[in-house]
Length: 242
Ligand code: ADP
Ligand code: MG
Image 1 (tube, protein in one colour):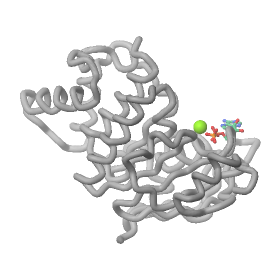
Image 2 (cartoon, helix red, strand yellow):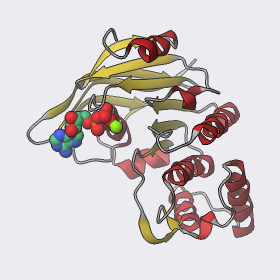
Image 3 (tube, protein in one colour):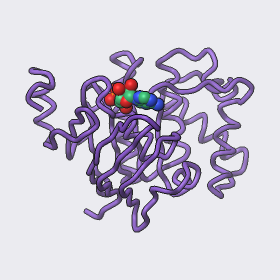
């Protein structure tokens, strides 16, 4: 497998506190990596560091392909093919979902005929069992928790990133929706050979996926790296041995 992301000695701090204390992590092309850890372990901070979406101070290296992107702003990272689905998706009143998606495509230099875009949008809405008119509604405004998470997956399907970071995509999804999300993500990975970093507490989102590696975070550090078997251990015994 060829490398896609190599993170070395990544630190993240606010002005008064260090939150990540030297994280090492690797994701090859087509791999699925799971990040777990207790509440407050630093999982979302790590996800945001990879996407470059906060005003924390960072040091270390984040190599994406051949490039160190540590200093690249979030928009550049998005254009390079990195995508983060937020743990708490933000509502943007006045911005319809379809318009946001078309602008995001245009920002990446992808121009589609309106008819082709609409067809693709409606096929993907159907795939996710979302209302066919969801594309016309304002982004995340008055959508249910589960629908918001599905809208994040919709963005992934339309924007076609190479590295997909899903931060608790399963929270808010009922059992059937989590299974559906897992299989849609798996289909997308099969089709594109994308890499996945899945931050989760809930093994259901992994039901259709082949997990290559599991990272356990504790207090802003990687406390353990293992294979999929470790998830079963954690499910039974919690994080005390991990
Ligand atoms: P997780 O996603 O693993 O539950 P987070 O990455 O959200 O954890 O948070 C890790 C820790 O960093 C938490 O203790 C959180 O309160 C703290 N933290 C995050 N952002 C800030 C901030 N801006 N200022 C101070 N502490 C922060
Ligand atoms: Mg979190």
